[in-house]
Image 1 (cartoon, rainbow, N blue to C red):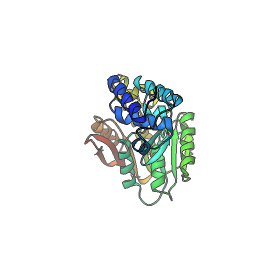
Image 2: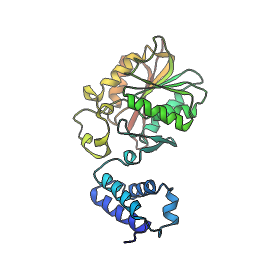
Image 3: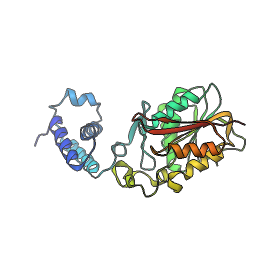
Image 4: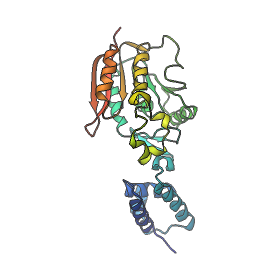
Length: 281
C-alpha cells in the first residue's frame, strides 16, 4: 500500500494524540524528519511523496517508542538549546527552555573578566551557551557521570566551541585548591524524592540522580552554596535554577551563608526559577 508523507503524518498525529502526547503534531513531524533525514520544509514541499516500505517501517518504530512515553529528544538523540543543536542521551537531562533563563541571568552577571563554572553540566548546555556568547572567557563544566562528561566534550567539538573545558567528578572535587571564578552557575537536582511529577511525562525516562535531592530537594543547593564560597572571587556571583516553589527556601539558604544582593528571577511562565547572590570577601 502506498502511503504519502501527508497520510503518514496524519496517522501518526492521531496515534500520538490517543496515547496522550502533549504535542502530537510537533512530535510526529520531528520523528518523520528524523526518519527521512530531511528538514521540516521537506514535509510541506512534498506532502504527496510516497514513503518506501523501509521508511514507513522505521517511522512506525519511532512512533511506537513515543507512544510508550520515550522523550523525542532521546529518540532522535538531539535537542536545541540557546540555538545550539546538542546531542543528548539517557545519561543526561534533556535541556529545557526554562534553563535558558539561567543563561540570561548569568550573562547579566558575568562581568568583563574571570572564569565561569557550570556545576552538573550534563550535555554541557549551559556551559556551551555561555561559551558561545563569551568567546574570550574560560568556561569550565563539571559532571559526576563520565558518560555526561564525554557527551559534553563531544557537543563542544561538534559546535567548534573551544573556550570550554569539561571535567568529571562530584561538584567541586576536580578543581585545584585556590581556583577562583567570577561566576558559578548550576542546575542541580532539586526535586523531592516523593514528587508525583517523577512518574509523569518525559521525566520518567531521565536519570533520577540528575533530578532528585534529599532535604525536600534542597540538599545539593545547600552544599553548593556552602562550598562555592571557597571558589568564588570577591564580588563573584552564584546562580541556581530551582523548582517553582523553592525561591523562598533558596534565598534563605544563601542569605544565611552570607551572600549579598540575593534575589529570585522568574521564568517565561512567571514562576520563580533562578536565585542568585553575590559573594564578598
